Length: 200
Image (tube, rainbow, N blue to C red; front, side, top):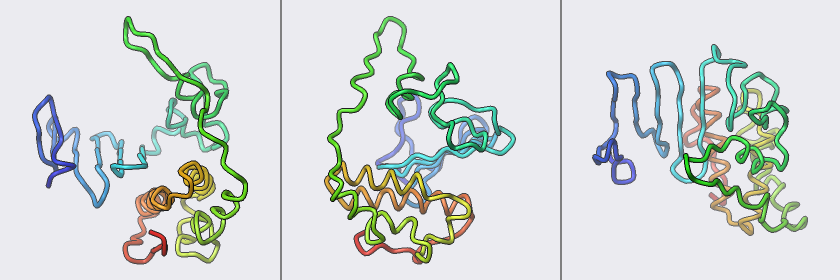
């Protein structure tokens, strides 16, 4: 199977599935996702357009730090800098705090946030069940996921990203797929063919 025309490993174009280092690292394509799995349980999946997910075994609880959070069970302190303080400037500040320039190069973090503000009228529409509210609808098809993967952050990401994209439903659909993919992997629920949004 070819993953976007193949995968370059040490400069050599290779097809997946692929096993490296005596099965210490496996790379495969599962549905729309490219998936990397290590022998110590780390799993990285990327939908090739919008969302990346990092899943680690529970034995690493409270031992992590960085851009993916600290895995301590408290979702309110995920944006910690290397100095263990909340990053100013949201996600942009978090990314800047963890950046590591190459020797001899200056690192330009850019401005804090140059995206235009989203009009409240557009946000209000996107928050409805016909758009991003589809994620949080208590009796909707994704409600089965809510106890395993809280949809709150995915909902706000969907509203914000789709709003900045001027209501582009492809952005909304990518956000819905990201949540659905995480639900399927975390809750071990197969939603294939069961969840469909009329705009996707």
